[in-house]
Length: 207
Image (cartoon, rainbow, N blue to C red):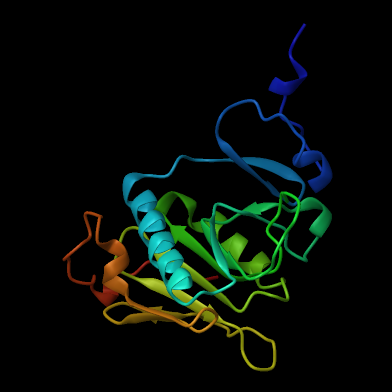
């Protein structure tokens, strides 16, 4: 008799997903009710995530901020909320909690690391994050080039049509009053010290 835990449901709700016994050790997220396995992070991807998480964490500690940076949190967007449980690379929240929570409460900043094999998935997640009222900024950091795309909520609550592109400049995050040279987050990667890629070679990644 087959083990029910080894079967991947065709469709699930968030309530079912968070108690689901996934069939392997990989990370999964729920996209419009469909569970999707997430590929393991490559070295550059993981290094960027760790370095940026460390820099933001140190910044929050130095400022005695009530906010905290969380690695790979569950994010429930407002769009079709009962059937979406996305996994971000990093997020910052300033809310407190007493009991453990499956999804991060009230994130103000969400960061994704973009790899060539997860481009569509990443930008799909970004779109859903814009539906969360607490989110003020979303950053998509490339793991192929020294580049970040920054989306910042406008004063009227809307979002810009396209992100600001950052290359040889500072990454400035107003939501947590954080500034760092973009190249600093690539310090432990193979991209450290490389010049920015030519504009003709850019990935067209924003929908």
